[in-house]
Image 1 (cartoon, rainbow, N blue to C red):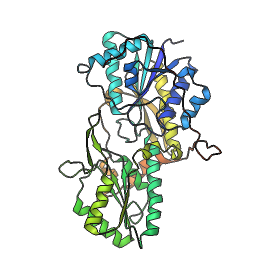
Image 2 (cartoon, rainbow, N blue to C red):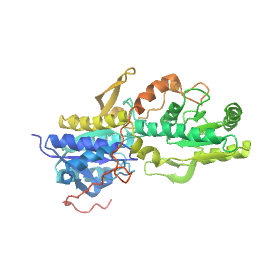
Image 3 (cartoon, rainbow, N blue to C red):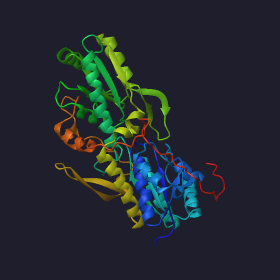
Image 4 (cartoon, rainbow, N blue to C red):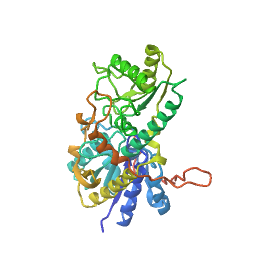
Length: 418
C-alpha cells in the first residue's frame, strides 16, 4: 500500500462543478486508503501551512460536494513566478510537503495552476524530494490547451444559452412599446467560448442572439450600430451578447474597468454591456436594457450540465489514479472520440503542453460576418450542455448544499512571512 498524504488545492475562479472534482479526488483516494489534505484558499494555504484534514468529513458530506457550487476549501488568485524569482516560495512549499509527508500534489485550476504544478515538480526533482504533481483542469473560459473542453465550461455555457433564450422571450414580448435592444455580457478575456455558447440559444439569424461580439474579432462601433439598427428594423428587437474581452482594432479593451491588474497580471474588466447599451441609446435613440451575469455564470449549479458534471468527476478520479501511478507533471484531459453520438475519454497530457498555452476558438467557429457561430461551433458546443443534473432540494424550496467542517491540521513549521 502506498504511504504518504495527498494534498489537493483549488485555484482561480471557481465553477459550478469544481467541488464535484474535489469529491471524486477524495473518494478515489479514500478507496486506496490515502489520506487527503486540502489547502485552505489554494496555494496560499499551502504556503501558510493552513491544511485541512478531509478525513474528518463524513462520506455523506463528501458526496454532497458533487452538487455544491463554490470552492469548498477556498481558492485564490495567486500566481507564483519563475523558480528563480519565487524560489523562496517554492522551497517553502517543499518544506510544508516534507512536514506533512505529502507525496502527491493535485492543483485544480487553469493555465497558471498548471504552470505552478509543473514548477513544483521541477524543484522537487532538483531537491530529490519524491512528490508527484498533477494539474487538474478547471475553467469556465474553456481556454486550456490540449483538452477538448474544460470542466466548468459546459455548465457555464448551459447557463448562458438558457439565460439568453429566456431573456430574449421577455424582450420580444415588450419590444413593441418598450425595450428594443438587450445586451448580455459574457465572461471571456481573450477567448470567446462563453459568448459563442450563447449562440446555442437560437438557430436562425432572426432568433436571439442576433449579434455576438467575440474577443477574437476587433470591435467596430460603426458597423455594430448599423447591424443593430438593421436587425431591429427586420425583427423588431435585437439581442446582443458581448464577451467582456472585446477590443478595438488597436488592441484596447472596450471594457477596461480602470481597476488596474489582478494578481495574475490581467487587466480588470467589466462593464462592456453597460457601455454598449449607452452607445446604442445615444446613437440610435432606442430603449436598451443590459445585464452583467458575472459570477452567476460560474456558480449556477442549479442549471449544471450533466455532461460537465460527469467530466468534472472523471478528471478528479483520473488525477488520483495518475498520481498513484507516479505520472508526474501530467494532467488528465478530455479527448473527444465522436461527435455523433458524442463520446469522450480521459487521457494524460504533459503539463509542458498545457502550462502557459491558451486555446482560442478556431476561425471556423465564427461566422464570416463575425457576429455569430457556425455549424461547426454548434456541433462542438451542443454536446457539452446536454443533460440536467439538478441538486436535491429541501422543503423550503432551496437547494441542499453542504458546508464542510474544514478542520485544520496542527502546524509543524514556523509562520510563513512571505
